Image (tube, rainbow, N blue to C red):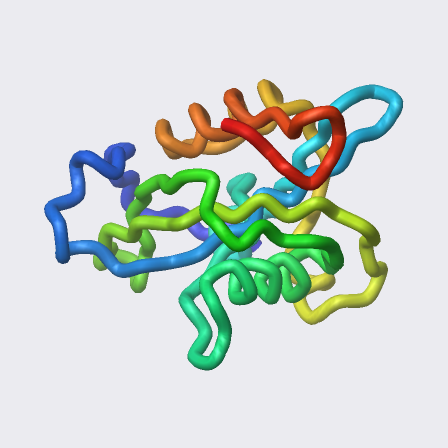
Length: 162
């Protein structure tokens, strides 16, 4: 089900005053195939937009571990997550039809080892692989577009560069 919400202008991390945003974490799930580098996007539950798996920090987990947990819950992804973020982006998180708060999201690269058919949000989301430029074209956030376009693992190993 797609819900229409009041359109908020796109924001950049630089647009958000320090201390005025809520923190989130996201997983940039990737793999190399014969066709080249692919990035996994999922649809959001409320609007059906293409997004990275993301969510709130989880008590008892590091930021990268929380991002990996979100990748599992939202996309059925298992793999190796980097401990340091690749970058960050900002967006407006809708908390109701007329309420939105700015969020700054730290993004962690996660090299996908396997995809499960059964996972917690399997019946609530779609998932699809995209080339980096295609993935960038599908998301709304300017900083995330730039991060996706610039993402390039070194020689297929677990050390992504941006």
